[in-house]
Image (cartoon, rainbow, N blue to C red):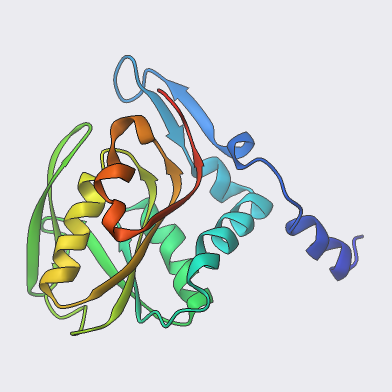
Length: 187
């Protein structure tokens, strides 16, 4: 049995996060190498490392809300909000939220969506971090940013596990100071 100190040391040991991301060829369509992050979530060391590293840039800032993007962003961002001692606001696909909402169109690599947030979830001048698993074309995160800005929130930054820079999202969102842990140079 490992002591707490040994266990803590193992959890914080540096490792290559890409080793924990499963790649699935030709999914959801031919020619795409899908980056499946569920394998990171399944591994306690990889998951803890991911949350610690995604949270780190914001630890010394006053963050009021982590805005989480449906669905894998929910898993990462809620853990980050716990670490940042702040609230969570949801961005969901149209028709999934029960109260009054505002909406924004989103164009992404596989098609278009309409995203929504409750119209009272962000208060004027709240400091916000937007979180999702993968930054690809940037369409989804950009739509989330527009929703936050319409409610008067201040976007402190964006945090992603994976960046796919060849799809242009990180460049498109540069004004929002996006951060990520790993990137892939091509599909």
